[in-house]
Image (cartoon, rainbow, N blue to C red; front, side, top):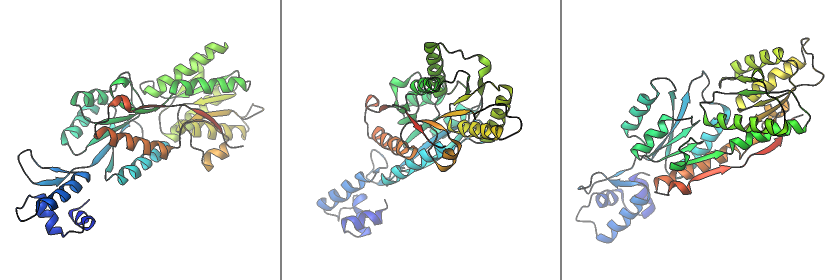
Length: 336
């Protein structure tokens, strides 16, 4: 909020507000009190501990996206961040999104960003096993919220789906439908959510006595075109597979498209099209036409809003133990 807007809200002149913020002696104590109270509420703070000059706080939140593929922002994350941006905007914050490579320069790039001091807090998306960004922010005591967890989840604020249950529910549902040959389209286990979903799938398979051989697992990235090509080749190599569990929305759409095209081609040896379960796959027109069964949490925009609210609460000093939220997954059948 600008000085002009504060002046309008308090029905004062811009000059009066400016002089009150700078502690001019010709402004009455009661007016100064009104102005300073409103300024503090809107995020203004003292420029220095021994100065009476007030400046507007940065009020910027930086969201960090790990970049390792040509497509680093999938439709789900895009919708999540859109919800975050709208909610932060209502609180007077600006959201900036920064992609950082996950290679050798990751920590140095992140360190440079943190030292610039241009933000009030961080949102970390796609947290990884032993995530160095989490370790660094904990050490620096910088406010942050993760969309996902790590091994140190007890020490910071986070919003996450019960990813173990996502995997367990996916495998159990396909088994109940009579599928015996199930493939899994995964992503790297360095992502914490992938590790948990894989563990849930493996435990469910073991509990019902279903074998999941190593050749029934396919690892892809976050690029939809590359995932489509990999899934198409995978299905051609494994004509006995009748269902796929896809650990990301990107791979679910890629796998469903590959299955549909294979079913309509002369290469098809299956009586029925391959069933596809997608984790966090949105219920839009595209996925509806593909007949994907989705293991979902809340709508992406709602998740983004919740992340924004948690971020603001953390900045204001809410303890991390009160900002740790796990969401229960549910099955949504969409499409044909």
